[in-house]
Length: 154
Image (cartoon, rainbow, N blue to C red; front, side, top):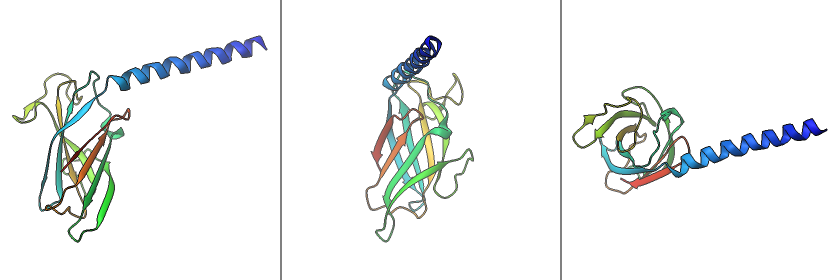
């Protein structure tokens, strides 16, 4: 019975330590949407996200991108877009167009390619189907793999 008690305390201690690590990582994670553009008659959405935290961000397949928008006939959509590694995302998909030291000047990242380091910018390219009404305001939400969310209107 003593061994079972010690194993239980050990398991609890390990779980607590993992929770502390995860909580610390979340606290040091921050992202900001610094720009959005809707082109292609409302089909192509580009979102620029800055890593304004202290944690390297990766595992983009575990990120979530949501679009809340009105289509041309006023129908409202809330869609979770699916991640793809393809350069041109299909209908209701998103991809990483690029990671940059300076998104406005499209200066490509140098350190740790494929990882969104603190201070870097990532451009997300998404394809909306049906197309968004370009005369109305819409919203995009981007959530990192550890659950930190940022959003912006477009």
